[in-house]
Length: 303
Image (cartoon, rainbow, N blue to C red):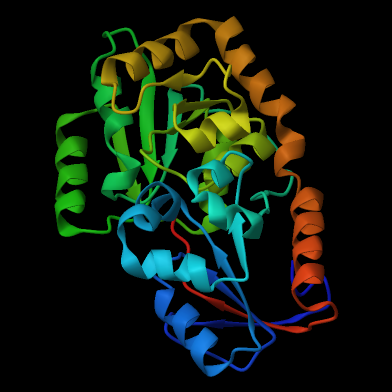
């Protein structure tokens, strides 16, 4: 999007402090060194810190380096309208909402043999990645639910847990990490996308599901409620296997409920439209440096 708006962009590793007009630091904690060095070595550089779920709901409350990033930043970017309330009051004047968009996606025909439930998330504790598999275990023998999980294991322990679950649970398939286009196809063909996270900054997979018209079942956390709406019927309490299983059962057996979930996602599609993200980004850049043309990104995102 920055290229499309006429700017030059370089992607650098955390810790770098390049000579640019503005630095976009992804993650307050993981990119803290880039933020510090940019402020000390190049005080004329504008600094934007893009806050993730682990930033908002954990690190900025407990980690000194994340707190320092908030203080040093010229602007703080969050991905949904509910996020500013999570930050200290004195920081909120810096906050700008730049929603995480997804381009329109064509809905693909679902598999006939299975009621396919997609989980697209790396295996790390914040994602509670095996919750959907455990909920599928709780369904009765008539179910056709199959949980198909795409995502890399970010620790040996999580890799072993996923393999053990797949060996003992015929309703769970772990595919490992997929190229982005394959992950999007999985989302577009699935009957439901399941998001079981403890915390999210915005959840790219949620935007992709909304863009594809795929119904979503998600843990009731602030990001999901802000994007889908507090009254969205597909929420379950985080970590509640029985409640998730009940929603999966309803989605499989009650066409009206599944259609209600789909309508709820379609209704919020304008919130994740690329045009809205582009407009918010253009406005942010105008605030920073006017006609600035060179930008640097530090850090890395994770599904």
